[in-house]
Image (cartoon, rainbow, N blue to C red; front, side, top):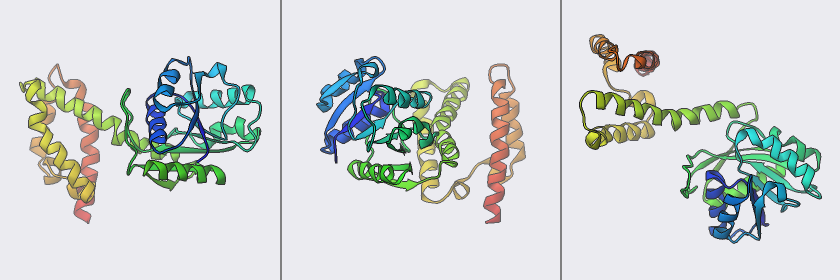
Length: 273
């Protein structure tokens, strides 16, 4: 693969740069807003050039933007203003919610555009493997070809998605990761209020969490559903709502109710099957 320029040296850029480096791909340059993170990352991957975006004057034939969603369009504009030419360049961004249309400024200047989004969580300051991860790709033909080449290097999988459906695809990912974490924080809050010590909390609830995820992944959410709503145990649900209605936890009643409604729908689906 031809050398690559990476713009954005945060959590996503860090993992992608390292994956490329260990996959034998030359990284020509790394840029970030102020340049500090880019310079630190460039040392790890032996990039030829690094620094702030303001110092950028040219890019490789292959460019990956690993910047926050709100900055994609502005960085694309910067590329058109500071690079000598963008003709025959291929530019991808890694946003899950936005389509390649965010890169329209570089397309007008002759670049081929697309998006490449790994469905994976990227904690800060941690290298995340992309092996086996599924990546949503969309864009122009040459950009799609480049995105699929990246996936092969990462030992990842790709599937093509339309521009219009990316937002829903990403919303599902937020439920799968962010809101799952939020729900586990609710488990923590209620368990501690019940008198369970924090040091024992995940020892107690960890097994049911792992088994539930295993059940869902090996069958389906409907098949994996258990508990009072699946059994039609109205009294237990009422007891939960009453217990949560106390002063310290009453803010969780709307959440429990909303999830209960969706769980009832899922339980009905299970019975229909």
